[in-house]
Length: 114
Ligand SMILES: [Zn+2]
Ligand SMILES: [Zn+2]
Image (cartoon, rainbow, N blue to C red):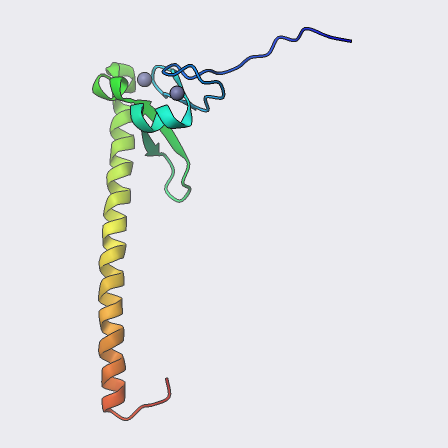
């Protein structure tokens, strides 16, 4: 027996594709994967987890008074993540340089037990 069911679908507000799984935190517009890449920006909102929230380009330009402090905090989080990544890369580079140096010095001192 056929039944009519009311199904809620989220369609991308840009291309109309169904299954839009991204939405702007500020205006609530829905985006499919492809359009979210073009029209929104991802913000990590947790320190360790990779979870992200999206804000569309229009809202980024004009977040409004209510969302401005939140956007500022998200941008700061973004900056801290970038700093941390740069720091880690620097440490890794230095660590690898030291590894080569130590390896060389160990050989010079006759330690072959590596
Ligand atoms: Zn789309
Ligand atoms: Zn928006």
